[in-house]
Length: 215
Image 1 (cartoon, rainbow, N blue to C red):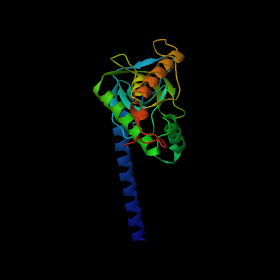
Image 2 (cartoon, rainbow, N blue to C red; image 1 turned 180 degrees about the vertical axis):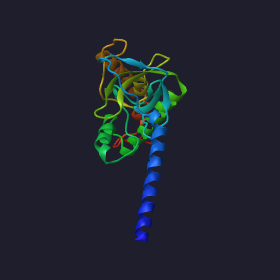
Image 3 (cartoon, one colour; image 1 turned 120 degrees about the vertical axis):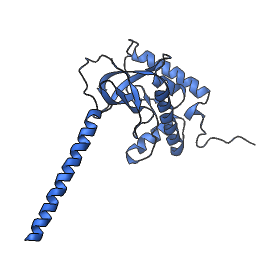
Image 4 (cartoon, rainbow, N blue to C red; image 1 turned 135 degrees about the vertical axis):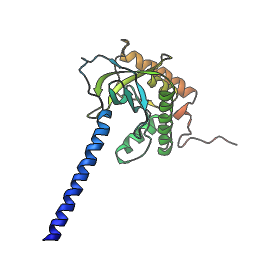
């Protein structure tokens, strides 16, 4: 009987400690959760004082930022960077990405994904930028589509296309300045053509089955 009471007492104390730790963690992270998304009637809003946040899930086209309203994970309009790692759910997407760049191998495609991640993180850390969003969700996730504009007047999506580190393949939108979706995409296509011609990024990697130059 005493042993049973002793075991019950220990279990109760263990439960109390778990609750205490859980409350401490909740109190620590509650101020860092994703900010609530206001109704904007589809209009773009600017996230004040946006700055880059290092996160293990960041990649070339999807990343976390902090702003005066909290933290938010963004997904770029118009472009899709290759995956940075391989797992079951992205195998089909990786094959599509490899094919888009003319027939890269999967390891080459993953390498481009890592390059895109570094490219995006470097620019977001080292340059001032403005984030504009309509709070449009990416499927049923906490990510929202956004445009990221730098002080040189160029959008991050355009920079990635120019560097040959993404495909033009995802949801588009009318631009915050009123430019039509079709016109902005046409500009991206022109930048992509230039990246292909100059063999930048993924476009410059040797393709499977390509003839090797004679030595």
